[in-house]
Length: 115
Length: 109
Image: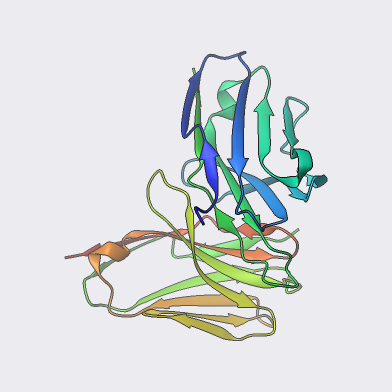
């Protein structure tokens, strides 16, 4: 098992451009989470999926952000019309249902820099 | 809304000293509590998971306790090594994790 993988690891873009991040969870995990982390802070929850259903979205997820998880496998996080304030590390995590474990496993993150 | 606080924010110790990292949370209705390690520019590595029905978990030199009634968890790292230098984060899980800002640990050789 290769763990949670995220792509790309680093993305530099100009303000106003669109960016998309991909997350491949651990294969048997039905829950998938997106978090955002800025320097010196703990990760902040953005959204999570159970299988293909998006069950919650944080107020941090403005209408410029959209996440999908087609067929309950990989997930994408798209940011449209990027702003400098979007610069952060975007972290993906996956888990089994908490009735089994609930332990979250994170990927290495996708670092976004908006110029 | 779950609020998680970690004290101290930073800690520097000589090699061999035991480390004690504190975590407090406001909502005792957590399902579990998880401790993570994060190296600079990297993702989070899960260290220990304590289910709400448990009081502690141990892995090697690491031991974490959980007291839901007081809203506290403590991570102990025995006989610290320079390789333990990292930021340690705790997170309470109701159905999603709420993180503290972390404790940055430096172990001096």
